[in-house]
Amino acid sequence: MARPLVMGVLNVTPDSFSDGGLYFEPERAVERGIQMFDEGADVVDVGGESSRPGALPVPEAEEMRRVVPVIEALAAHGRVSVDTRKESVAEAALAAGATLLNDISASLWHVAAAAGAGWVAMHMKGTPLSMQEAPSYSDVVREVHGFLLERASRAQSAGVAEVWVDPGIGFGKTAAHNLSLLRHLPQLVATGFPVLVGTSRKSFLGALAARPGGPGSPPVPVELRVDGSIATATWAMLAGASMVRVHDVAASHQAAVLVGEARLDVSGRLGVSSVASAMGST
Image 1 (cartoon, helix red, strand yellow):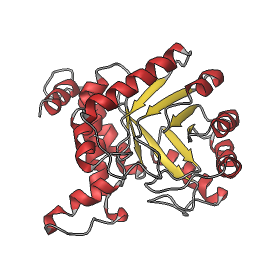
Image 2: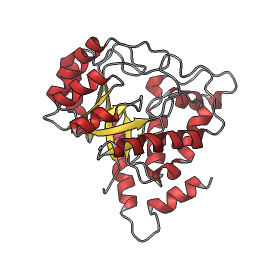
Image 3: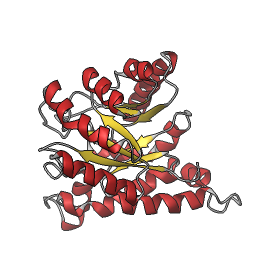
């Protein structure tokens, strides 16, 4: 692979934290999905249930109604994934043309195996409704990595040929947890499983960007978190992540191309392995 892949976020929801309501109508969702493919997305990730902190579950029938027509329409234009934690929705989405199951519950590998699809195991502490209520770990890197390797190994044993792991930035983690997981990404990459990272527009970026204003400064709003999103996606790609999940596809694709050029430098002056090694030692 000459460059990391870019997964575009397509929320067919009224309440997602960044783009909720923008693409709730199927026609607008399909239009945006095609636009993301045109901007360089390698995968468009369609989700019908918000997983923002505090989000309530969506009934299965409603989530299916939201995602299946969009996936059917987009599958002819490029690779489509479905972002769900419900077995019935995953099965319907894969039957409709999705070929990757982005599973924030890390429990649906048997569905991917039965469909011959790829599967992403993501780490989440708790559920979206409760995950940001004082999350704590004795060692966040050890616990997250151990969980992901256990789930990935179970998926492989079940017959899933394409298994991805995602540390779940922002899913039951404080800003300090997120930064530690980003800093130690080379360790996760070294396990051999392709790594997917999603930092795009998340709240810890807003909190970090507010720091120059002094203690108590309000977080930077979602629409002003693009710079931090691109910076952390680039960091993740240089650390060896094989794919980044983003809202801002065009800018992220450009960053991925530049990182890919660095990976092609066989002279060792700017090889990704040396960069990731340096990052992992900080």
